Amino acid sequence: QQLNGQRKLAYQQVAASWGEEVDFAQLEGQLQQLPTLPEQDTLEQAILHSPTFLQSHSLIRLREAQLRLSEAKSRSDFSFGAGIRRLEGQNDNALVFSFSMPLQLYDRNQGNIAAAHAEYEAGVLQQQLTQTELRMALLEIYQAMRNNHQQIDRLQKTLTPLTQELLKQTEAGYQSGQYNVLQWIDAQREAFTVERDLIEAQTAVHTQLLELERLTGMPLSRSIFTASYQE
Image (cartoon, rainbow, N blue to C red; front, side, top):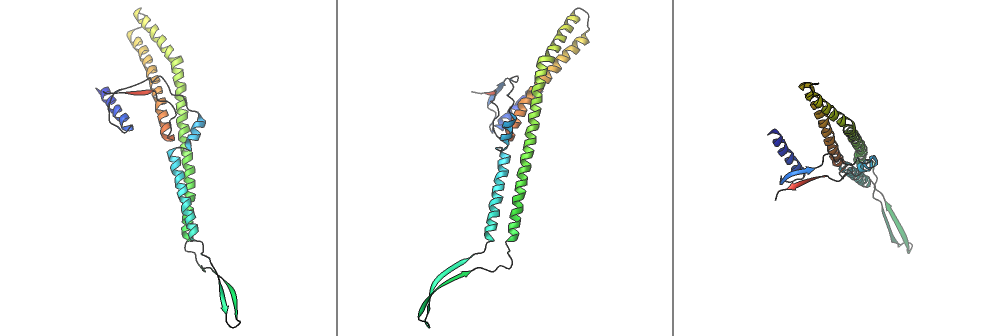
């Protein structure tokens, strides 16, 4: 009953991640079919396209635009003019040019420029921090995924054959009276432990791949699980 309850909860979590209700009867897949380990260079490039990094980059562009606007507001307005003036006393005409510039003893916009510049610099530093944090998180998950791949290989090629051989010999020894029932149970427990470790390592690889895809916002491997929908 507990396992059935956990299965129903898992179905609800899967459906919630799809933004849907549970309308499938069962989930099928091969846990033993491991996803391919992504290339480290692919992860490095994926950082620049991750939603978190793109959001910080957009914020920098906004801060830069605000800085340029503040600088534009601080510029003085120049005006030029030209015309013809009649000189009655000399019975002549003169070409006259004019130039004006407001005298600013104190630029009140300097504070806004300083604030905008500080926000822009803070945005650049935040983007660098975000990129570093993403890179460390991805490399940590990548290394853990790689370790689990190696552990699965050792379990399948070395420990599983050894425990199965041990279980076979112990069972034969028990039937011949060489071993007692507790020794046979111990051999069974060792075989079960190795099998459980293998399942947990395989599950961890799939979970770590999903975490990599969540952080990068892009698919890194073809899905090997399917849902069988109810008619």
